[in-house]
Length: 333
Ligand SMILES: [Mg+2]
Image 1: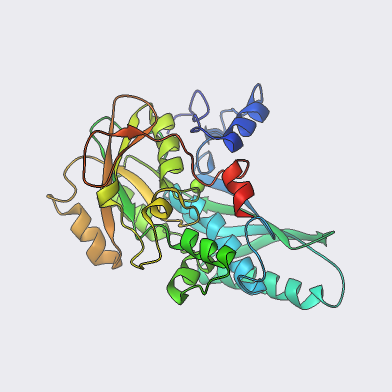
Image 2: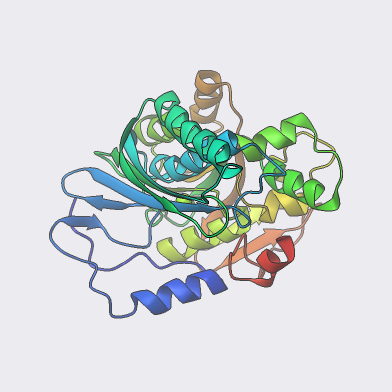
């Protein structure tokens, strides 16, 4: 793989405007860097994949929603999902934790760290190192995920006419968050979608090796927002079809949540046309016992457009996904 000439363009959104501002003029390239900043992870020669992901109490999780060990495990699952998005194998993680001092917090911090350790091991990875410091309030972990990929799956490889496919179901985690915020009971299946994200490591590598996946990423910010990243990176327009979205099979989950809700950690991949008729999709479903659903196409143009339920002409989507600096985020917490 040749070193790439420039960073991968990010999609629209206030959070990404801030990242663009910081990166302006920053030196991010060398002969060692095969995939620079802008994708789900960076790739250093020859095949080392690195990503970092922060989980902060009160922003990414709350301890009146999930237990401390689940919060630690969830942070690892979310971080490792970025390796899955690159078609990488997991080697291990470095985890830097901050926790408040005191008797009340000691057992929570211990459970949080045990959750981190157990989830790494459960995913077949190693705890490679980390740091521990005192926090003025609440738990925090930054997880650096380390993996290897001989054939990294980038956001930028899609071509016009490619079809977009999504693994699993969408909207479950966002519906759980909404119900918690409303003070309503959260069904077990939706709670699980938020608390126990499953990085699709094997699925992504299979899609690269056996289905010819040309571009891909993981759905952490919501389908619409993340599709915008693929559109920007590939220099194309994404057309999503509302009637096809694989909404989490629970009556509480809305189309809005399937389209814009974050934290599903499923994969969005671009495949050459015909994956349903030529058996690639069926082979995936049989191997992983997991849905693989065609949700749209890529064509010449920019941004993301949606064909509304019932059909019609695609309409440009302007709202982003789970943007941590947007009003959506302020409304959420
Ligand atoms: Mg990602």
